[in-house]
Image (tube, rainbow, N blue to C red):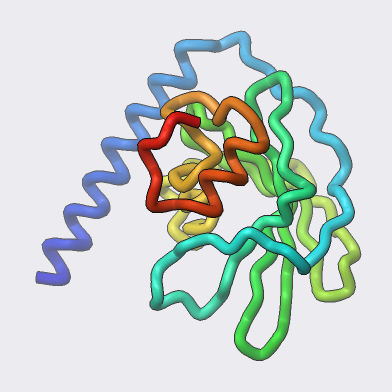
Length: 168
């Protein structure tokens, strides 16, 4: 049964990737604005993401870092915490129109940012180690193929993931 589930998941990922590749071709003139530098972040008051019970790491978004830019990219800082107290943060962006995310910088417990050299857009669906980005997209960042209407709507939806179909 496990083998059948893995096969179904792989097939679904292939279909999703091809659908999003077609979406990217719909707007060949799209250009990402230059991402602002990684913002300062706090580990207090994080909006915790629902990734299920079997996750070794807990993920939360610093609400003060969430932004929606003119190019439609939603940028944020997400903090990963382990049971031992180790924390890492990532400054990322999600492009709802194509179902992609990008990591611009990473920080360790010290809070010092290390910029990712030549960050690339990656599929939300084909990169399972980045389940937190997919959860963010599904739980509040994206409203279909567009970003939510406002940062406030994103945060409201992330705090209430059960209300997925509420107008954002």
